[in-house]
Image (cartoon, rainbow, N blue to C red; front, side, top):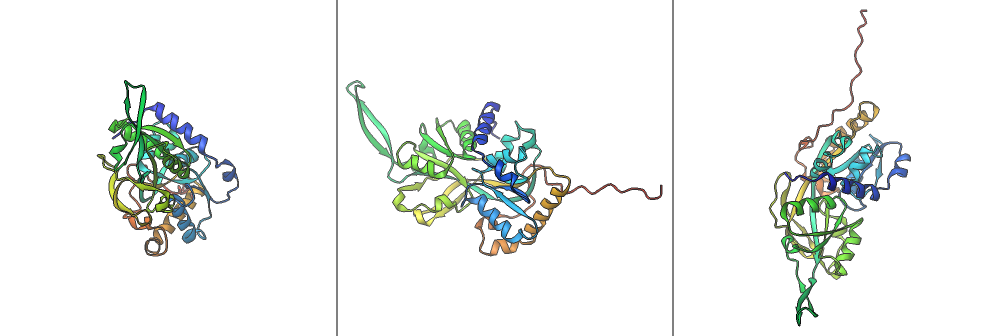
Length: 320
């Protein structure tokens, strides 16, 4: 277990607040307000699949965010009804926010993978100085061949990776220096311009943004080689467009979370859960996100309070 300071959690929550722009959208929604993530990435794709198979059963609208960290805030601030998040993100953020602690797990989902995006041709580091430090040495290009190669370097972090990256640094003590950005494209640009040694971003496989990269982008993926513990696992993934095969990545389980409703909203959430469960074979075998095939059980809550559903009205004693 990695413990995060309250100061760090507060800082990240403030960062999440600054990135979140869902309030106006929330006011326009007439169905379940679902906090997702950036377009083309894992959460948005899962939502699109749920809406396709269950949209006639339960009205839903999407609230795009930067990812799970924003989604937790959106639900705690009543800006979203349900939303996607990593188990570890909830576990850390619930320590400082009782509304987040009160969220309930509706569905256990797929895994999010930590993508370590690096420059394919290496990262420029300063060479040894000459003449007693008066002249700087010529820059040397070093390949960031694995996650542990990033020791002492600047890295860009996106969305929930702002928390995950700092958790890893707190445990590993690599001396990482973080640059918080809002989008993957911004992070990738920092890598290609040589301003950071890597971009850290999380997504289900395949990531829409990483999957869109081509060899001409001069980017690659570095494998994760640091120790890990529950709830994390290390899994191999491939991106054919980048020529990357069976690269180990740190993976964290995702859940669909709900506010603790007791009335009509609870019935809608229960209907959505039942609908997804009844369509699992279709979702796993049809033309949907491959993330559905990773799900072994929809009911594993990873220690998060499970969704309780609607509360039945108390029966009255008619004999009185």
